[in-house]
Each structure stands twice: as structure tokens, then as C-alpha cells.
Amino acid sequence: MKRVSMYMGAMAVALALVVVSVQAQSKDRDKNGADRTASMGSVGQDRITREVRHELVMLPYYGVFDNLGYRVDGGTVSLSGQVTRPTLKSDAENVVKGIEGVTRVDNRIEVLPLSSMDDGIRIATYRAIFGKPGLDRYAMQAVPPIHIIVANGKVTLEGVVATEGDKNQAGIYANTVSGVFSVTNNLRVEGDRK
Image 1 (cartoon, one colour):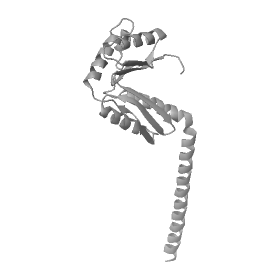
Image 2 (image 1 turned 45 degrees about the horizontal axis):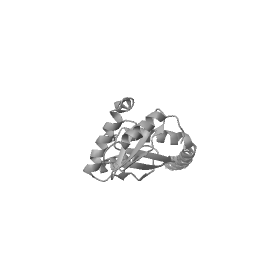
Image 3 (image 1 turned 120 degrees about the vertical axis):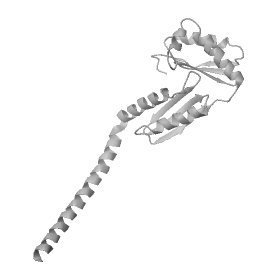
Image 4 (image 1 turned 180 degrees about the horizontal axis):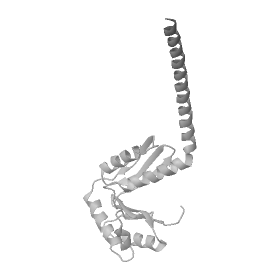
């Protein structure tokens, strides 16, 4: 009987040590997790930024008539831009939510109004810009770097081009399209920091 009580006492001490050890490891894990998050800083934010860009560009219905922008602030991603399909707005939010490290998505993407007139302007502007020698090379990519956004007859050009001449040409060609009320040329020249 004495052996049994000694054995039970030893088991109780061992169990207490295991509980204390597990609690200490848990606290270390919480502390290390917080430290990792704090030290993640710019390296983690750079990774999230790259992944957000990749996920948005890979969306199956993202095209030349849509414009998606984003800003990463820690674990919060703010989405902006304009899309022609409501499903693209929700798809963008869903893929960004799935990125490790993203804790919140602020979806401010505007869904452009349905309009057969705007659809006609989109096609005509596409042909006017990408049908010209010099600018036709931009149409060769899966998602051309020049995005044509049309809302109520107003055209906005978004994206990146190689030269100031390409930017000016695209704006001039968009202005020649019949039915366009105004053209805003927001194209950036690759390498410019604005």
C-alpha cells in the first residue's frame, strides 16, 4: 500500500510538472507569435503586397476594361478601382481574404453601370488604341497594361506604358472615338515615381 501511495505521489508531481511546462510553452508561443507579428513588419507587408498583386492579376475575368488597385497597411488590404462585373468585385475580395497575414479587406471597388452605349465606347476605344502601330504591342499580353474605364461616356485610361509618347498617343486616340464626352489620361510611364 505504501508503494502505491508513493507511486501516486510521484505521478501527481510528474503531472504537475507537465502542466507547468505546457503552460510555459503556451506563454512562450503566444509571446513568440506576437514578436513574430511585430518583426514581420515590412518583410511581411512586402510579401502580402506581392501576393495581393498576383492574386488580383490572376482573376479569370479581370481584363482591359477593369481597373483594380490596392493598398496594404499591415494586415489590412484596401481594394479600389472599377469593374464591369459585380462578380469580379466579390472575387477580388475573396482571393485577398485567403492570403496568409490578411486580417481585414476594405472593398471599395466600384461596379460600373450597365450601358450599351458605354460598351460600344469600350470596344471603339480598344480598337482606336490597340489597333495602331506602336501601341499594338501592349495588346499582346493576357491583361494589357493599358486599362480603358468607361462610365457614362467618360473614358479614363489607367495603367503603365513604356514612354511618354505612348501615353500621349493613347490619350489622343481615345479622344477620337465617337460618343466620348471626355478622356482622362492617368497612364504612368514605367520608371516614373508619382
